[in-house]
Length: 245
Ligand SMILES: Nc1ncnc2c1ncn2[C@@H]1O[C@H](COP(=O)(O)OP(=O)(O)OP(=O)(O)O)[C@@H](O)[C@H]1O
Ligand SMILES: [Mg+2]
Image 1 (spheres, rainbow, N blue to C red):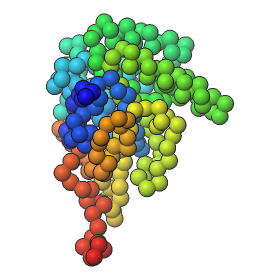
Image 2 (spheres, rainbow, N blue to C red):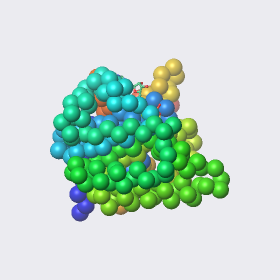
Image 3 (cartoon, rainbow, N blue to C red):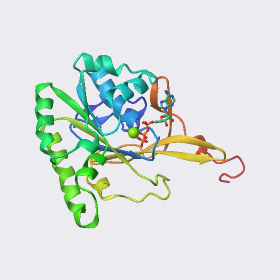
Image 4 (tube, helix red, strand yellow):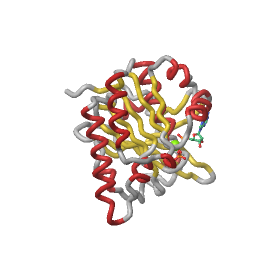
């Protein structure tokens, strides 16, 4: 049996029937504001706090200062973990990226040197910028992401990647070629019920692993992002009378 590691997201390990396979590569995808960055941050932060696994968080957008501030409101003292050398924060503003993947080598060295076990990349935009996905280049984009994934695998880390997507209605989902590259996909979305949106999560796939296919409610609050494993989303519960006879 492959070793499963705890994700750091309350409830998610139950959805995954034990956790994430060590050394796997997982895509976390969803619309803006669905909690992708928070989920990735918890994976790194609680990986270090609860599992003693050092982590690297690569951010293409937010600075450590900005992220630290929002982490505080979610019950995480990110800066203290950075100061302790348990979490490494790498900011790669896309505007400054040059030189293709030459930076991978530096990252792999840092993983080895600092005994890093988890890496989160927020987000795949990192590669979009380097290898724009215009028609003639799609394969190069995919190839470079695969190379990066393989490097992370060789380095022995569990790798979580965030990607944006515009349509996250579970009934109208279309799959992107990157969805086929990763071993697992976690989808975050919002479902509307009347005048109210509810946050939800589902696991679309984990290769070689049994997991729940249900849709679960998610909450984000002062203690972070949680999956409510014991509940069916309120937005999906049929009104009395509409249901099955
Ligand atoms: N302290 C908090 N309490 C409650 N909700 C919060 C808190 N902090 C953030 N949120 C919610 O989380 C959302 C942001 O989550 P996050 O940044 O992880 O989204 P994202 O999916 O990464 O978005 P984007 O695609 O824009 O990067 C906010 O829009 C807000 O609704
Ligand atoms: Mg984000």
